[in-house]
Image 1 (spheres, rainbow, N blue to C red):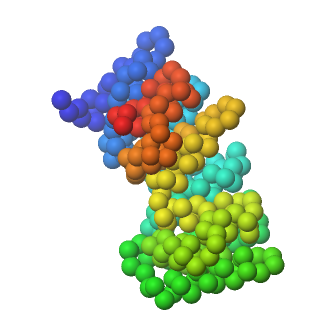
Image 2 (tube, rainbow, N blue to C red):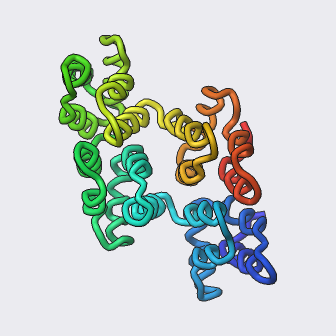
Length: 307
């Protein structure tokens, strides 16, 4: 039976009433609604109860569940703007900034920049300038501003030129010509970069990814690798980040939560498939072993069936 946004708003209100919050009901409603449905629920809730749903959730929930739920409520573009604003202004997290910007498509970035100004009252570029420096800063600003094609087409001749240029700018010389890396990575489409990676592998001993690891460092290196891996296979890229977030002592919940929440409505099926192929266990099993309680229930609801 389909429920209307009004029914959902009433269910949520009921879950908040009384002693303690009926968290399972809240998860049941919100984890199974897409971005447009969540927006309608927010509007209904505000109209019926004269209060902001996110503010109420902040009061009623706690810990990681609260953080994940507050991140889930907005639509993807608004969520990216919120993540970036926090990572550039309150809890400085340049890893998150690099991951979000370098893994989004040009049209997503354009939308994000407009939203950032209206939500945060400042240009995203200005906040990046105040927190980053050097090649990392230059790359992020260029990646945000240069238009790139989102189509599958590329020109083989230019691909081969770029592969040679990158070899000459990195492995072939002493020291690295960062400008060449930055220009190629920021100006070319994903289809083109995936082809450059293949051409590089065919003509050199190392892969382009290895070359980046040897020739660059810090956040600049992270940015180049994110752009390259998202050009080749975003699902595999995010599967790898999720694995990293849960390896070793303790779980990096911030990253785990951010990836699951931001990719749930994008390409989660691909990430799950890549995770299973690469690590021979399912992403659901990973989340189950690394989290607990209602937080675990919520993330598993966003992941969908264990496969």
